[in-house]
Length: 537
Image 1 (cartoon, one colour):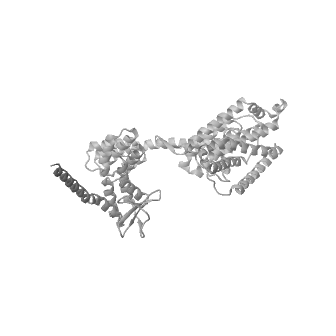
Image 2: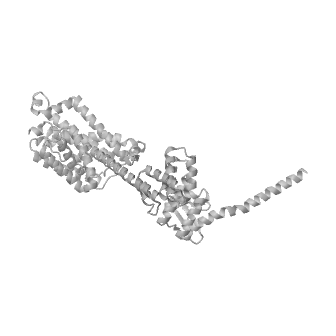
Image 3: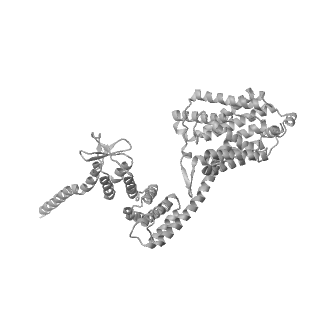
């Protein structure tokens, strides 16, 4: 009896195995057939293949469609085989996932047109809507929002029901609203709710979506869409002003950093230093050298490269500044024209020296990880490098103010600024103060170069881009007055960014220059007048 049972069990297992063996090709067939359509080099077949592969639920679907979007999907028209070139250089068979040693002769890239690109984006959005990574789910929902593909609605609603992440839930809600707006069999009430959701999103993509709805809509929907577009336009105009203000503050921080050293030199010594921009350039090249040493010898320290470069740039540029003052400037006090010509000639010498040492081309200075990327605040984008430069500039400004107020050198500098002869009669070595002041101003220009290397090209001409603007800031704010330099830098930065959209970059700068000339006619000493050697002269 037991033998019969065992024989029956064996027969049943054998029958099951045979059934699975014959059924497996049938189950795999539709997916393989869909993949093979990529080899037909026909846009219609490719579109059908994208739709079928995305709907198959096969784990190879996402790699295949991702490869198609990135130009890594190739096909052999003869054998109808399709292959995925992976990012690491390996090759797999798209239908089976098996590794392939090399591609056969005659393979060609699977082509895309604009319609197919939209279909691919929609398919990728659907495939990643249920990803365990919240960032990928949000990106997928945003892709569906742009494509508003009705085929993705079931997956979006399923993902929305399961979602616990607040940002991802909002993205799924917006994607669902975008689909409902274009779906024909949707009630008017649901469409009004969808319009409200898109209106709340309030960005350019939302306005583009509402604008593309077209005129053939019921009157109530038309009215709601028009109101939503008007509201979004008003909000975007306000955010545009906020974005321009942020750009102006960012530019102002750069101008302040470049001009603050010049304000000290010009205010205390009355020297028109046309080589100030080259001190900025030297600081930028010091950063480049530091990063090159770290890249080749201590790559693990790259994230602290700027922290190493700041004191080095200050020392290098400051030492060069002291040498310039002792070797050239001190012989030209009281002769402003000769000083201007001498420092201008010196700037050309320094530029050529850097060209000889480092070459005339731009040099690469990288951003540490903590200065890379950006984040959104409302409808504006703030980059981390600009934000850190603003923080760094204000920190340098605060340290400089504290130094001038609470140190012996600061006291001597203020004394020489207010009355040079009286300071000399009180025993202050004015020549030493001159050298240290010039060195301090040059050193600050050097650390300005460290910051500017993160947002500008490091080249021998770097300083020339900022020297004129630095003088404008110093003269407009008030010669020798640091608070005037601060106000002047941010005023000119913000004014420049608000004029640029109206008049253009070149005409905007010309308008700023004309306004400063007119202002100086009324207030020759700038916004905040300060008695000093240059004024007394």
